[in-house]
Amino acid sequence: MRNTTILLLSLLIATACQRIPIAEWTEGKRNDNGQALHTLVLKDVHQGSRVWFQELFDGKTFVEGSVMHHYQGTSWYIDVPKSGTVTLMYYGRPLPRHSWAPEGFILQQKGKPDIPMGVTYNWLETDCRHELSCSDMTQHPTATDTNSDEIQPADIIPSIKRIQYGTEPMEPIETHPAGWYRITIGEKGEPKIEAEDEDGAFYAQITLAQLSYPLQPMTIEDWPDVPYRGFMLDVVRDFRSVDEVLQVLDLMASWKLNALHFHVADDESWCLEIKGLPELTEYGAHHALPDWNLQETAALKPTANGRIGNVTYYTAEEYKKILRYAWERRIAVIPEFDTPGHSRASIKAMQAYERRTGDSSYRLQDPADTSYYWSAQDFTDNVLGVDLPSVYKFYGVVFDEVIRLHQEAGVPLSAIHIGGDEVPGGAWAGRDRHGMKELFTNNMLDLAEARGIRLAGWEDIARGLEPETEERLRRSLYFLNVWNTDGIEGFPVVLSPAPYTYLDLAYSDSPDEIGLSWAGYVDERKAFSLQPKDYKGDIIGVQAQLWSSQLRSFDDATYQMLPKALGVAERAWNASPEWSTEESFEADFKRFHDVIVTKEMPKWEKAGLVFRRCGLE
Image 1 (cartoon, rainbow, N blue to C red):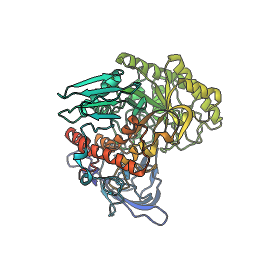
Image 2 (cartoon, rainbow, N blue to C red):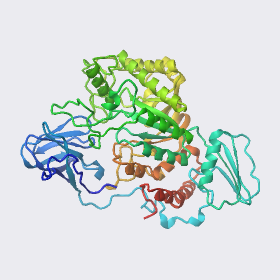
Image 3 (cartoon, helix red, strand yellow):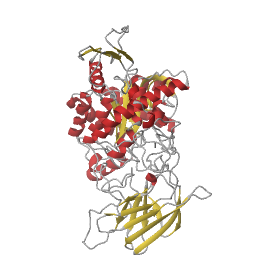
Image 4 (tube, rainbow, N blue to C red):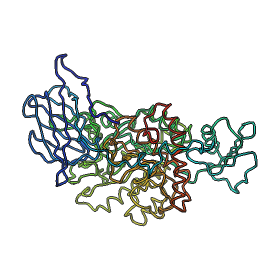
């Protein structure tokens, strides 16, 4: 995945003879207190300069060397006390994986351009830790277990519900669900398609493209079990270009997914151009180091990847291109603007707007608010001041622009997702927290109802409401993403449970893997084993989530998707697996795995996609 030695060449070298400053980081061993003593050596740095870097959610204890300061989120900086080489030793947590090491080292000097530093890493020597996926023969079949002779012509992913080989007619089902289709292939290999609707006709074509050729006589009858089959793409922490988003949509279409949950606004970035509020993208999608006084005057601080100078947003025209491309593939785009927590990018951008214009009518946070809190991603200033009328003026503009863009693209707007998760304790100090949530929810519902649109949110948004507000939310709600519990009664639910559907979780605890592990590890087997019947609520869908705090490239993204996303796609189309015994599950997974290895992976290989090569070693 990531080279153990990474050298980032500076784009800003003052003279040809100037030496590029270098950071060398060495992993330390765990001590009895569960900490590790890491060593950081800074070479060719000047006294009075400052070195910035990013490290994921890792409290540090200073040991020796220069003072190490925490700024916001994952950002740290060091004020350099002398020229030449500076050595620091500090206690931090042992690395779960190599990808957790500090990165994005940048040298900052007063009055000079910021200089990206080269960085090398020295990892602890260790035996390969337990591999949860692929190489464990007792858990996962590999290429040596895959018998391609057992793969049938109509074995595809997601699997077909009804298949009969030969020319004998298949007994028809009594009713045709939405998305139903039938493919009949005669002796001459000519397919005949029948479909309940446009979706069914599209899915029939997707199936035909995946059948083994030459086509042999058979009858196929298939349909989705749930109406919503989604993929959440986080472009905030690690931005995806338009072309990369289109490639994701192509993969989604091949898996018969029909909703792109597009996570375009969070703490780290605001990624969609909004007419009339240029700071949202000119400031909120641009990243640079804070100035010497630690003020983010010109741009937001770097995200977890540590990059500076990168502008990361979609213009209105680019967004409409994505909308049209998706809808041609029967995929609806549902944009998410995470609120009322996870809102740092918009808060800071509107502060920049106010500095430029003097207009405080879009203010998102009260300057007099003295709340002290610490968010899940280590921010202390990311919660909306939900008692400010200006918050709802702002989101009225955002909603209107999103509606306009969907109308101009000629595609429906199923809902606007408003997040609602992880509002840290301590926010809204001096105010009744329950009352603030009631106020926020009702005001956002006012905006939606006035515009005739529906809302969606993470499960947190529906908890702890007054009965009247809960009922009002239920009427306007498209769905709740259930990510952290076993569901909520009385609400439409899209299953998004972290232990099964969070693709950003590592495949295993091998140090060479990337990803988080707070909810365990996720591979294609874990995703495949999801049992929707175990969850409460009105289950209308299943969704995969690809958060990007650990991603650094599109290759990282596809590696985390492939093949584990196929397990979620299988459960989204076939949501009621019948596994009466462990043996029946193993047989079903064996077929699923064989199809991945023999049919899916060669396609990814041909397309040049990076994926976890389970079964192809």
